[in-house]
Length: 280
Image: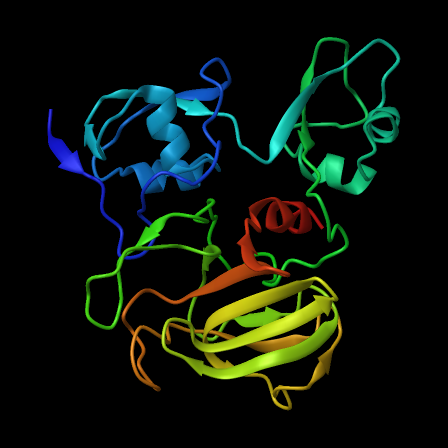
């Protein structure tokens, strides 16, 4: 067996803030570690987090062994439901208050969603607390599977000494991938930011702002003060930031998406919203 530490140029981090550990008894799968696996790659494949994988398996470090067995926690954005006699997907959706389209999208493993039976376990997407009607900011098929990187540690700073908490979720995508506004709103910040590179902050209501960072460029006409509609093109994925204006290539291209409450100005975890919007 070969001892190895996990590596990623961007997404490795410390445990999430708060109480995000998966219950020890809730597992989606048992996974056998393969050569070149990392906690990040396994977490991304199974839509969980590094912190949840470590908590579920009692891991004290990021080291893995080829052939090691890992219990994979169930995704944090899904719950489960056991089908009852007489149930249909429509009945379940209405009983649980979940749009039928989203319930179906969360259960693509079903060969025929019109043929379900008592005792069958299906996935139920967990509703975010607010902003249910948003649009996923990247088109289907243009980005890689993503996990929750909110509150992971980040170590870059001007002098190289600061450790900070990551205030968003990173979605890996090729340079130049179009980015769309998740909700309608007004651009309140645009231009260069040392950490975020070419970024936009869009106020979507009186209490909430969405943040899009590391863009390669903005869409035509997008400037501070622009009013944008949900689904409108606002820019393109890049790798800008971590330095003075024009710095790029310090990390792989991706969209950093954040959500902030305005009073007091506080980052909130956008992961549930992104997974909810991703279902269409």
